[in-house]
Image (cartoon, rainbow, N blue to C red; front, side, top):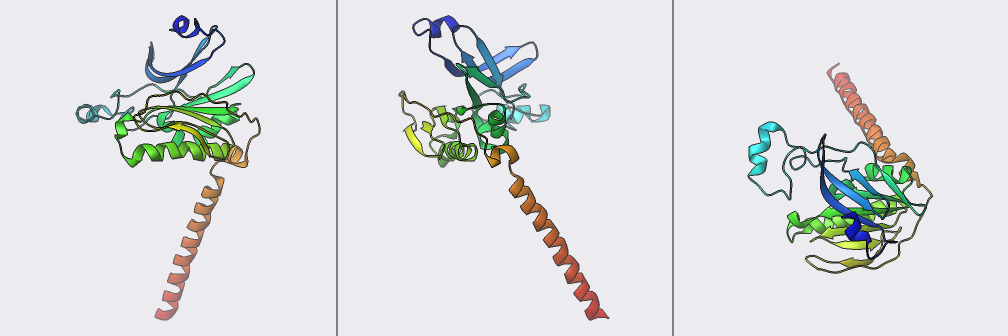
Length: 225
């Protein structure tokens, strides 16, 4: 595969999705290919019911179409960033792109722009693939990183660091996007701290709820007396 992809354009770099195997198991993988190397990133955030299936549920899972391999896959433990020509690239696979803090780990590890490789075909022509694409726009804004997204059947596109869609290919459309992407090495507050605002809000809400209950019972006891 490496020779086939790089023979005509030896300066080109390729990033593709693949199912891969080794002695440890079966993986959902992003492959980075150039004339010198083939680097594999194994998906780390697996989808329950599709990529992680308990043994007792296998018969049910095999009876429905959930978009590909059915069973429990192996997973990668780190958000791998590939460096090419001094540029760090982080590639998320499919549903990994919906997790904000998870995607930020690519940026923490040196990604100057992000890629998303996904199979959205199993959504069918529904609002689902639109929502999935929108998550990539959020990740771009949170981390101030450009995102190049490649989807079979879903929406492929190039998104700038402000979350604006510069170019795209819609549902069930064959084509090629030829675009430059911007690079950024700075880390945002969200990249460094993640969902800390949400956690603090939940903490304050819990304290407020406990305080409200305490005051309610205190007033109730006074009325009884």
